[in-house]
Length: 172
Ligand code: FEO
Image (tube, rainbow, N blue to C red; front, side, top):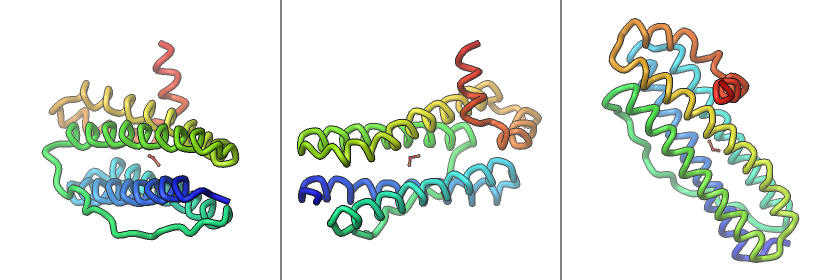
C-alpha cells in the first residue's frame, strides 16, 4: 500500500510524463510543418515513449492500492526560434525530468517504500539514456549551426542516432 506522500509524488510524475509527451508532440508538429520529416518522426516517437512512461506509472499506482490522477496539462511551447533552440529545450526538459525522478527516489527512501524504490530504478536508467541521447543530438545540431545542408543531412540521419551511438560517441 502506498503512503499518501508517495502516492502524491507518483501522481505528480504522471503529470510530468504526460506533459513531456505533449512537449515532444508539439515539437513533432512544428518540425513536420517546417518540412523536416526525420526530426518530426523522431519527436513523434519520443512523444509516444513519454506516454508509455506515464502509463507505466498509472498502472503501478493503481496496483499498489493508490489512485492515479489524470490531471489537466500545461500547454507546451508551439513555436521555436530554431532547431537548435528546440533541441536545447529537449535537453533541458530531460534534465528537469531526471531531477524529478531523483526527487521521487528520495521520497521512496524517506517513506521506506522499497517496492517503489525498486520500481523507480527503471526510470533512473531510462533518464541516463535519455539525457545521453539528448546531449548527443544537441552536440550535433550545435556543430551544424545555421548550415542548411547540414540540417538536411541531420534530418535524414536522426532516426539512426540511438543511445548506443551516443554511448560510442562518448567513448571516442
Ligand atoms: Fe519520461 Fe523523457 O522522460
